[in-house]
Length: 329
Image (cartoon, rainbow, N blue to C red):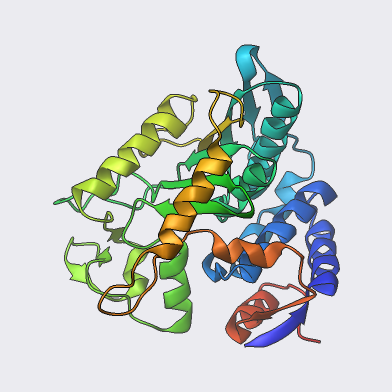
């Protein structure tokens, strides 16, 4: 692991992407996101993504998202091939803006994004920080086969939800519909590590633990038919319902954001969740003396924003190989 200065890393990385032709606003959104992912320990969605995103940086120079505000708190965002991370940031901006204008329930659809949508938990965490409950579902490139087959149809289609908790950090849940996310498998491949059984199939449909097989093989759903059902749910909501791609069709990734304000239905969601979190903390440990997991606690590392973070040396080497700046200077 190597410690990097976050302020200098942000400057160097946004400058690098800008020099490649990426608009400043887009570059800043992408860099801020991947650095935040490193801070909260989601390294599969951190700096390792930049080499991939940088390959198409020049193509984004003249592109701009098209935002249309419709009736009843619905917003559509046509990403025009811009990075999914940036498109989802714009979606969160629009949702927050609608709530500030008095809307209780807001839906934002995103279509035509490219590259990674990043760590979905980071996106919805922003909503919870503004006092609203946020649900985000996003499609991704086809890499997962239906149970019992060897033909990829759907992506690892992820779901994330964040909700404010009175007097405590928000709850944040972020999970793909596959046994492992593509990013985690790619990280294992970069490290030369095997993945557990039950994660991958090779191109013939046979089980494998070699992460290199993900290129021509497929990722298994999480929990068999349950994970596959989640992937179908995401495809219906974030694909078909918003006019995005469905199945193996072309058209980039798409997403649906549903945000619910604290006064939408007359309840006290943050107070209710404070009670729930208290019950989780008070739960009696089991035989292994483990406390109940409260998802989202890692996001408290973002406030206050740290001055430095430890990054895998191999990640910095791959960034340098892609032409990126040396962050360990």
